[in-house]
Amino acid sequence: MEIARSLIDELETFSTPSILNGLKRLGLPVEKLETMDRLAIGCMAPGLGSRCGLAVTRKIATRRSGPAGGGLQAGPDQGLLAVPGPRFLVVQNVGDWRGPVSCWGELTAHINVALDCRAGVTNGPVRDVPEMERIGFQTFSSGIGPGGGHVDLLAINEPVAVGGVIVNSGDLMHGDAHGVVKIPKDLAAGLPDAIRAAEAREQTLFAVCRDPGFTLEKLAEAMKQA
Image 1 (cartoon, rainbow, N blue to C red):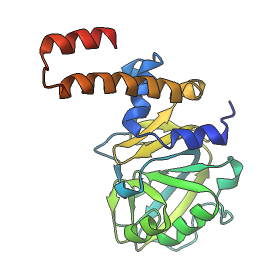
Image 2 (image 1 turned 60 degrees about the vertical axis):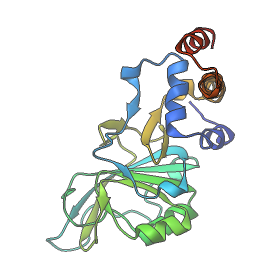
Image 3 (image 1 turned 180 degrees about the horizontal axis):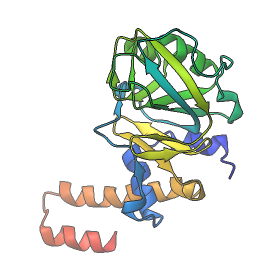
Image 4 (image 1 turned 180 degrees about the vertical axis):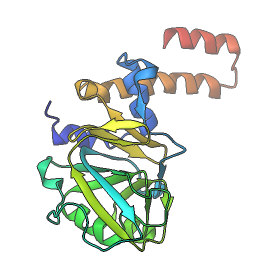
């Protein structure tokens, strides 16, 4: 299913919690919300805000030992151009993912931004976090590491598992300081209106709570009507 760039841009104006509120309002059961494990994946630059894009997937292996040059011989885009923009890089590290070798840093971020890739998420560490934030590349990862080793590219645009979520090339991804979620494409078109409806309901309840004459009875009545 093709997703218009204008819709992706609009979804990027909302927070990830708002995305989840909209999906629930559209009838998606809570147990089917695909959010990445918050203990495994964290936002490296909360100040950059939300990012939304179509997934470009890679499977890599990081390591300290052995000669350089392992894995696939790929071009500098490493599969990014196979998916229309805006893009969201999703990388599964099947190597020493708890180790010190970073999955990417400042140079890779520059290339990604130049190729209309707005964000990246990986189960391994990253480096050059302040530099990546300055150029606007939003990153979600297991943490920060110093780098120093080899990164072997094993697969491009094949299914990957990151933070407990299976991601395929072309999936619609959204992330901010709260975490990363996969958006069902068949619900994407109705999501902005659903989010605005959910926000309007919240504003009604906020107003009741701010009223000097607040009572639990008034709140209960507003919750029934909103």
